[in-house]
Image 1 (tube, one colour):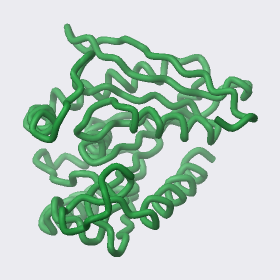
Image 2 (cartoon, helix red, strand yellow):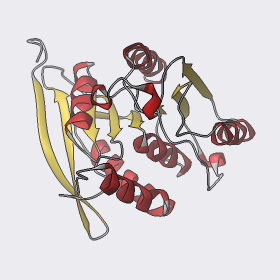
Image 3 (tube, one colour):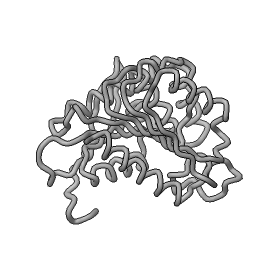
Image 4 (cartoon, helix red, strand yellow):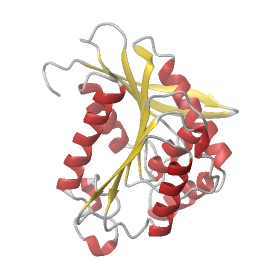
Length: 243
């Protein structure tokens, strides 16, 4: 931890309906007064150490970060089969996915350190799908960022999006069909959403996760250039929307 950043971190239990969820809050308690809040939504492995690491990184930028838990307390997939089953459950029930992510947004916005006029959400893989659903739910936030997110649009209701959208995408990602990309862009265009999409050459799925290996032929692999460039793009986006 950097010496200048006295990070306060805590686990927060919250509910959506009858389901208990367990998220992770992080902020620099050396910063005084309200500041922007950023919701961090995990990939298909759930609210794990990677999601918490990203929340810490966001907190070190001077924001309040809350890593959401979409799956539920104690539901942490141990392998790709379990992860696929969990992610599939929510991808197949978009109203439930929206309810879960909005419950997490409520927790973030209730934190006394958060300036609720300046809130954004970021998501990785499954989390990218999730923050798009948050935006489509009509959430009153400033922006969303997806990193190698699933981009399918079954509901096609981008007309509800009030925020700006940044999509960070691996140019060679085999898990996101070109038809999904085209359909999403068409949907965002038709709804007159303020959106931008960055393609990273040589990057496949999961390009921000160092533990995804470096073999592009597997379809998911870490790419240091894409990881660093997309993080810088996010910082620039935040500078604009939190102005």
